[in-house]
Length: 259
Image (cartoon, rainbow, N blue to C red; front, side, top):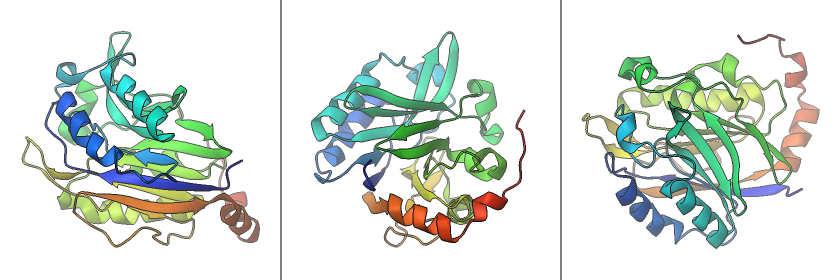
């Protein structure tokens, strides 16, 4: 059991539908990752931006980006994750993949596709839970629009850490800030949200505001920023468990089933 994890969320601009250029660009940040870092998060669709041209940028899990992630996971001894377009058995997914030194650790296919942009027409709906364990921590993966659906995120499994990757535009950034904090409070867990910056080919602007919250909703990372940066904080398992023992809010949660 590793009781503390040092997390770095890379808040970056993305090159439109250009996986190779994005990998090259991200490498300069990976080279600067501090030696004590345990987990590195990249934004949603970090190889392409939030494109509906799924076939143009799709890869398999045996493709160049997953190999690239594995290389950096080995090189820096980290767990690295973000979402990209994955083709599998004739279907296309917006898939959040976590890769460690020994290969893929976990994967999550986006359940709530952003219908306003036609994501439901371009990508298949995910059905997996996004739950996994790493160094003794129970971790849950989610992608962007999933943030708006508290029932889907409800902590019925006692996960410790909830991770969101996003392309969340400036027009609705107040919702991003508010909902990330709310997910931490209601689920009594640490929450990390990484959002991209810059402008995409659809002329949408993205303001960052990547953040890390503790189980009481206190922001552990620095003030919100719209700059290209690494948002860092340390999360503590023993502090989390002590808080849950003191404040037994999860024991009073409602029971339900999702269909």
